[in-house]
Amino acid sequence: MKIFVFDYREFDEAEYFQKFAAEYHVELGICTAPPTLENAHLAAGYEYVSIITSKIDAQLMERFHELGVKIISTRTIGYDHIDLDAARKCGIHVSNVSYSPECVADYTVMLMLMSIRKMKRIMQRAEMNDFSLPGIQGRELPNFTVGVLGTGRIGRSVIRDLSGFGCRVYAYDKYENEEVKDHAQYADLDTIFRECDLITLHMPLTEDNFHLIDKTAIEKMKDGVVIVNTARGGLIDTKALIEGIESGKVGAAGLDVIEDEFGLYYNDLKSDILSKRDLYILRGFPNVIVTPHMAFYTDQAVSDMVKHSIESCMLRAEGKEDPWAVL
Image (cartoon, rainbow, N blue to C red; front, side, top):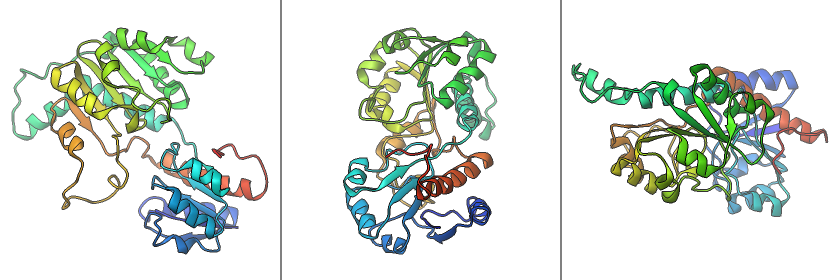
């Protein structure tokens, strides 16, 4: 079978694409750039397309339909960058992938610890040979009550890790998981906002939870609350978060994702003027850590992402059940 790969990364994905393509006898078409209306024609003759987090809007979806594409597989867990309504109208199937939850869980705990130990300030001061103590006294994680929003594979892994620190943990999800109840107590959002010292997000982004953390939610939270987001930027209203930080209501934030990050991350833009004013504001706060959507980025995760994208296309081609099918 044939799969066309956009956003093909030579420096990390290539070895896995070549390995699994050979193993599964797949012919690959390759483009290192993201899919656009200008280069979509490269996928002509390929029914299966693999992408990363590039935005696939209605116009591009229609173009792929004209080219005979039957499935778009995103090498990510999230798929909010794909216009599903357009895919449905065009009759194009969409799938995602899964990978070890430990990569994001580890990164989440790291951001928690860096946030509560004021690591950004410590590192900035140390670079200037300022080794003084005032202003960098941290707090200890076992003394925190933590709210985990979303108890899928990643959320459950975070809860398991937090249990080792001895935290009190509340959890929220539309669908409760019995495994979670060994280490956490399910609660509604208002309870979590009211009771938790730290809130961490692990949900996919949907129309229902867009700006789940907004001005009203932040007002309900404890003074000095710590917010960590390694899920999707749209879960948090950035303007409301900035206001919360400026007022002191939010004591610290660890953000691996932000709103409107498409076309920003994974590119070398050091000489560019970015029209991302909120990003500049967030990065300017001494108590906010912003990283470029890197929580997933481990050797195991990259291997899983490539492998599952290929397998998803193969299963669809063979008419078999696809565990990664979205649409």
